[in-house]
Length: 529
Image (tube, rainbow, N blue to C red; front, side, top):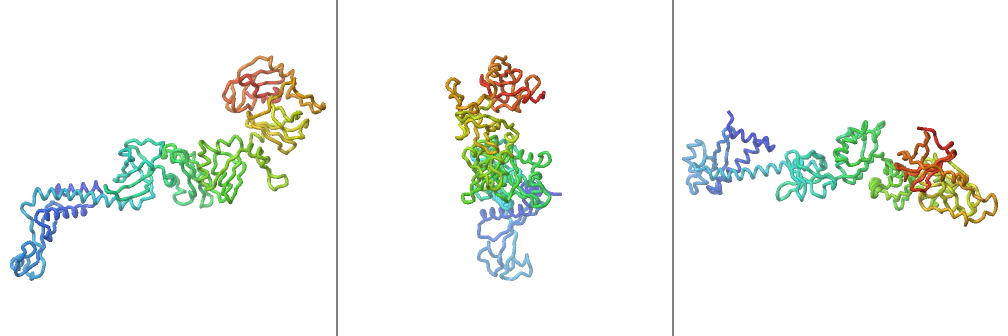
């Protein structure tokens, strides 16, 4: 039957993860130390413990001599031969010397040394186990939250997450389960210290390896990663195996894989973009989810000038420049973002004889609003302005007074064309040339130079006399009036109540007492409910 000593050793071995042989060895060393403290340190003694009963016996090694000078180190030949008959002078014999008073004091000393040895064994075990796990991700449980850092436990070891490795937006709770990244294992005066992180970019990479089998087995490679811990992460991936969709593999069916990564990061947004060897394509992909019209690279300064539609400018830059900043860190290029209107105002267009499409043609392909906008004609006034939806824009270049031009209007701007050539563009709601009072308008030199208003003045007078009704603008920028839908309206009135006046031919929309849109009822109402 096993003794209580054996049961205690087995329990400690199970709880501490140390073998029973190591525990017995430490106890024997502790008993030797206690014996030498009590009876002198000059003796060469050893201790043997019965693992079943826990009985400890002390053995002293003595040299066999003909005449004893030091009884603690030597034994006379006659006495030695009573124990070992064939022993000779000069040999060493082990003699049991367990003292009768090897009791309370020795046991207390042994206990102290024993506990110290156990702690040291645990420390060495932790260091040997975690030293080879730097760079790995582990699951840990929060145990204490202090000003110095957060203490966690994992695999019977204590982990420390200092303030610099924490995510500012996260709040840690006792018994909270977290995925952490091991950054360092070091010796400290208080024991081994395992430093972990929640803000390290490699944590995201380890999460993808756990959730995406293609990443773990090498079919999909994470080429670059940029992280703003707690807010957003951008990951560039490529396929190393034919037929594998790198982005689709990371996102998973219905986004289940990427959602698991986001949940482990407590809601941090993760953008997965395809990597490309072409820097221009890579920069355009890195600015996702913004639409990119064109990317121009300057190899000397490693600057990428990115042209985006007007409506995508804020999306490309991101909140406080976050999207552009992460894209720059992901690609290694300095990114300068410009919208189409700014680029056209700067006059940076491709010459007509140059190869490839002009910026204007590229904009028509990528800017859906402009590509689908209706083209209308306007007569340029003597002061080189045009009127569009009762707002005057100008001045146009010299030589265009009295000529007919084409205009395209979007929610963001007005574009003026001479045939297929873009002359100038204006921001909607930006600086415009207000119409001059009728009494002060200069007389037109010829009848063909007189620019008529968009609709006859009597039509405007009839609209001003019509009853003002209220309508709410729908999220798609349209409104419904008498079973017909009209739009699109300027983005600043989306979701708001606007005023509507109508006649048999026209419908005018007002915001804060000012007209913002005008439609021909028989042409622009699409008749949808």
